[in-house]
Every structure is written in structure tokens, then in C-alpha cells.
Image (cartoon, rainbow, N blue to C red; front, side, top):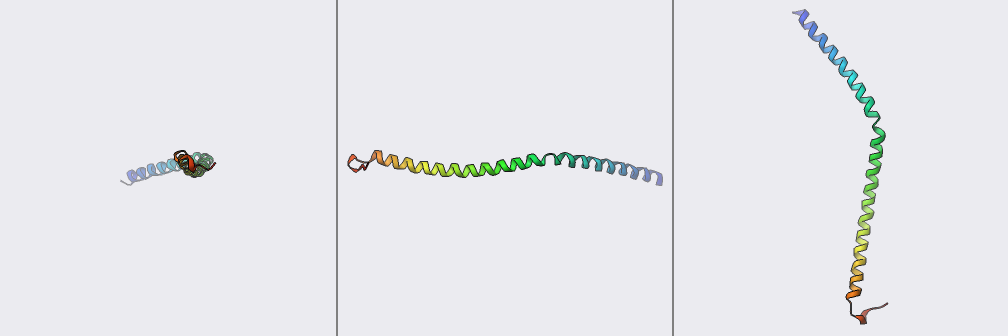
Length: 81
């Protein structure tokens, strides 16, 4: 009985050792992705800033459009050029 338990625990030791090696390999591989993750984060910040600028431009264009429409729909006596 003790021999069987010892063999079973020996198998667990081998499994744990294999898992440790696997985890170390994953860590080394994931480290190479850090540069790409930083680049993606920078792009995401730039896109957010661009969205803010586009929103501001959209509001400005809408305001200009309203002003132009009011000028074209105003009677000619109200035009002040």
C-alpha cells in the first residue's frame, strides 16, 4: 500500500514540475507582448482624444449650418452683408 501511495505522489511531483516549467514558458512569452500592449493602450488614448475633437467639430459644424440656413431663409431686407 505504501509503495502505491509513494508512486502516486511521485507522479504528482512530476506533474508539478511540468506545470512549473509550463508556467515559466508562459511568463517568458507574455513578457514579449508587453510592448504591444503599451502600443495598443497609446492608440486607445489617441482614439479617445480624436473622438472628443470630432464631437467638438460636429457641434461647431451644426452651429454653422444653423446660421447659414437662417441667413438663406431670412427675407432679403434682413440680410446684413
